[in-house]
Length: 201
View 1: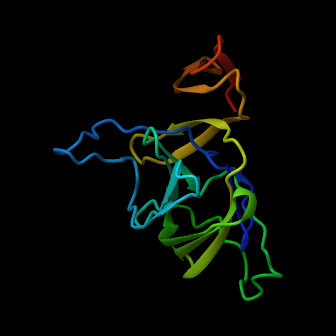
View 2 (view 1 turned 45 degrees about the vertical axis):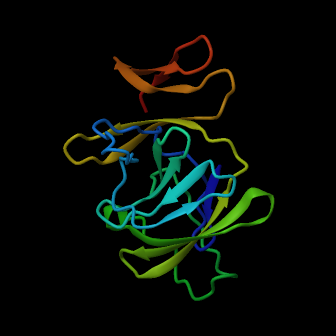
């Protein structure tokens, strides 16, 4: 799937920017189970097809996060260093500019609304708090298959650094573990018969 903005266009793979994360220490409490690894998930919307849920992020560091319904893993959608933004000035002529890229951890996603569209291309409206107060409009393309990605998380600050984005491939799919060997990153495969070796960016 792809997420792209209309106000600010974001051409980004639906899972781009991070490998799916399943958090440790997320045990059930009685018969209540949890989806962990989110930051201030104040609002939720279901993507048509009911395979994905999108969560807002109304606390530092705020984010729009994707939840895979089947395995409860999470992946950040926005913000991401790999995004390309463009202003959709014709449709949204009162918008002065895309979201300030320097906003980073000040970004907050509060309320969400998803308007279903044709051919699995939907519109996501996000109440945004940050350097400006606004409603940001994203195009959500649910047709595209997600790329696999490798991220690095600073254990002290929990900041995420994108390292590798690999296009979807039926014969090689990333696992949940990557290791660094010298100047390479080695990644196992959930499917297939190989281990991938990537140069460190």
